[in-house]
Length: 115
Length: 115
Image (cartoon, rainbow over all chains, first blue to last red; front, side):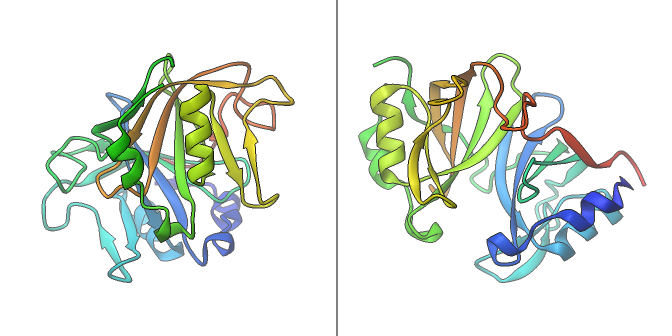
């Protein structure tokens, strides 16, 4: 990917103990698909390869999304937020994003509408 | 708001030390506006009032988005993710979401396109 090196260096990993949350949005449908976490290595692998990589907090390891399932995320664009501690990946999702088989991890309504 | 009480009770605040990240998406444009954090009280205030409330990690206090700026977020829907540790607020944003004056906090491109 074409990278803004200054912004890459500016990512504030310290606030989250070496990790930043990554919001993942599908480029076509604009659905929010999931939230995962990335360390510096995961972000670097993502910009190098163009495919989303994250850091698993439970397995304490770098992972490429879809490496085993085939449900990869081709990253079109990475946005950084105002205080540089959160990223937004705009992706082309292959298959589904959620390990449950749902398109998005946000498939359940907790609350809705007016009082 | 009309609440699924079982899902409200199911929110896993422990993983994040009493907080969950909240992704905020505009209902109309479907832009991802910001990521903030909520404790149980902030979620309860949100469903009670229908306006987005968060917990400020720096100020260590509950806050209602837009209370001083007027840039409130009327919450249409709250979604919960598969592992119940992240929320998605679908909102009607008044004014702008970002304290910088930008519509979204994600206004800068860190990386783009193919290699």
